[in-house]
Amino acid sequence: MRLKDSPKSWPLFLLLIFASLALLLAGQVGLLAPFRGAAEKITLPIQSALYRGQQNVLSPTPFSFSEQKIASLEAQLALLTEENEQLRQLLGAPLPPSWRFLPARVVGLAEEMVIDEGQVSGVSPGMAVISEEIFIGLVASVTPEAARVRLPSHADSKIPVEVVTQEGLRTAKGLLVGGKGEVRLTRVLQKEDLAPGYLVMTAGEAGYPAGLAIGRITAVSEEKREPYQEAQVEPLVDPRQLTTVFVVLGK
Amino acid sequence: MRTTLSWFLVLILLIIVQTTIFSFPIFFPLLLALYVNLPPKDGFWLAFGSGAALDLFAGTALGRSSLALLLVAGLVNAYKRRYFSTHPAYTFSLTFVGFLVFDFITRAKLSLAGAVFASLLSLPAILLVNRFSKEKEELKI
Image (cartoon, rainbow over all chains, first blue to last red; front, side, top):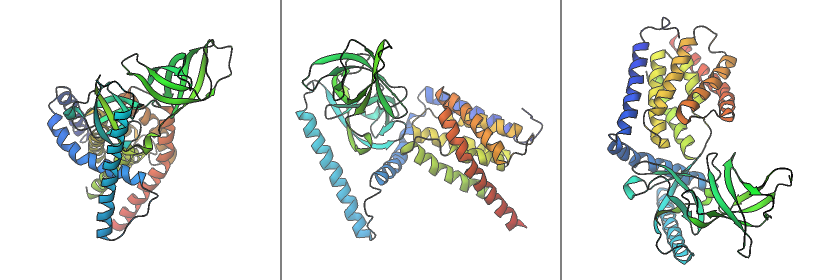
């Protein structure tokens, strides 16, 4: 590096490097949690508004203040109605009665899904996030007021799964991996039965809860020389359509 | 200073969009174009502020992105007088390398797709920043 170029700016550079390291250290020992929690009370509503705006981008926008107020109230009512409906469906879903759920709103969906419940509500990394009995993802990181959920399509996602037929017969075991926005079923032995339409469910290994549906097989690779079979899997829900999900707090 | 603040607000807006609805690095090319055009001190402040905003909106450890962006800013600052730094080809290659450095420090990954995307975006970004810089110089004259 040519430090002679702009000697007056390099002390500032070193100072800011030091400040960044101090921030990192303070964050590690938890000194920044109160500040972060307060800041997220401002940032999450902004992200939520942007996300809702993106979801409703094709719907007409009212112009007058009263129309906007009505639209805002209608949106709130729709959200609460949907949350209520999902809670009813969750109660009717064949999930273990010992599981405890925490409803959370989706406030962003970029590389990971952002939900508006975090450490303060008891959410911690590794918890499953579901909608009805469908697996949406696993909590990857938490901050005081929010959590980031890693979806099966994420490049780092590896979920042990089992494959069941439409009749509920288990036919294969494998690993569901994500990447480039797609979900692939891998590590399935050639002797095991895979076919389009079969359901892919969590196997209950590596910390994932068992028996949650993830997706459906859409295509199976024809390569018979490889030791393992592969298949394309389409998730049962489009995460972009979700407004409310449930965090499985305890099993 | 006012110009730097205006650019900072634009960067914040891009960071919010990137962390909420868009998984590609859309703020990075603009930040790099600004490093090249602005005085080093302004570039360092932008790096620190943008990094803090990115960590806050992305839910990552505060200070991590600031550190990575500052190191990239340092790299740009160290080499920008050696080459014709406002040339799009220079910015293109600099963005590619800079993004890989940033990605490696923040995520321990080397996303080539992200680097190519950021490099492609660097061309309109440098043109935009150059245009605003020229307009400002003309106004001064």
